Length: 242
Image (tube, rainbow, N blue to C red; front, side):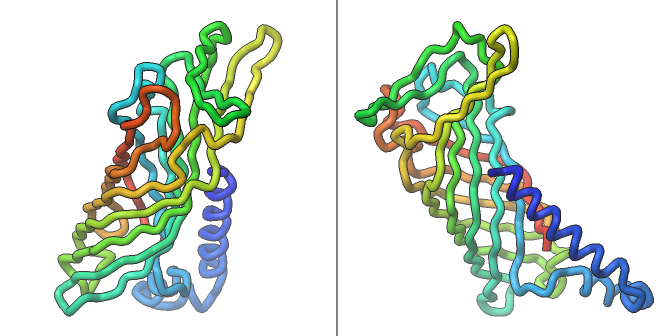
């Protein structure tokens, strides 16, 4: 899922760059004109975020390695000016892909009745054990630019929130069975909360920002024992592709 989306973004960006770089009229144009033409003719912004996940109030079996627990968010947004002082309302829509890498030798299991539990997989000596959650997100932010006349060369700060709808979840195991490396994926609901919502913030310059997300919702709706109050927060970097 993540690789497919990133591949599409790369192809789109490469196509736009190739189309302008091979145009002889483009090469003859002034720098200011070339910079404007290099941007795809779309009214909004395409943003990619790379972050790291952290859990709160998680039980011991769900302790995670935050360095390996990554987030990739891809969103499209549109800036609506509020007054003439550099303030904007920014609604958007996107896809959020979260990965939680278990630090201990556990994974999640769900039986035919829908009951979810932690399963000890120490005997497999797993190389990796992940929980993966994918969402459709609706971010809503207020953004301020210090130089609204040239937003690409302006400090900016944003605050707001986002709402998400879970559309896919799975566990992923990787272990050596003695003869080959085995990869196992199981797509189930795992008692996860089908909705998420929380606070967002970002600060940066031009199209580059530090961002944060603090969930106000629990990660699980009917999860394994000890996860009733488990939630997450994310910090990372974001870049506007256009």
